Image (cartoon, rainbow, N blue to C red; front, side, top):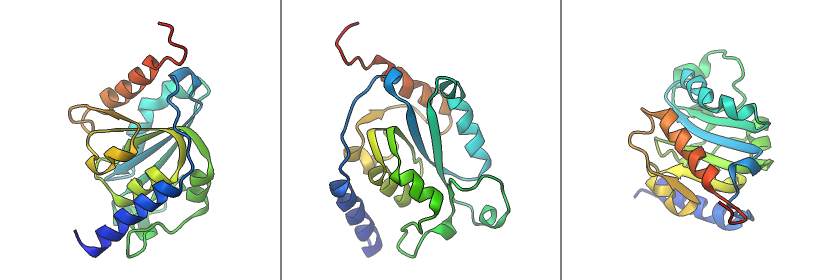
Length: 183
């Protein structure tokens, strides 16, 4: 482990300790705000992932996407609605994010659920997992580094290739959570 990786891991641990979040396992019917953190290879993948959440938005669920696009060429293009996209140019030498208004607004907002789609195990998204104030953190077993920070892990074969299956499993298990013990 290099010095930069050590400093990044220490920052994640310290941020998690300082984050005063209250962990709550809530049923799907009580979830009204969702943050999806995703690592993408290009900006077009964002729309593909958003389609898997369309039926939830009909149920008055506010869904925010914060994506890291690992493409320097798309960073320079003039795309629309890129206020919730992080490009490599938004990161400092150590991999810390240079805060923009939209990212700061997302971090300051309270969410009921955070879904980790950080398939590339990017440090910036790992940091945001612990930084964002959310009641429940859900992710897959693809991000081994964040195992101790996630509240619920979903195991799916090849979630990047079968995104609908992974998202359906997340909401299936959240639908099974029953607060009052009735079946």
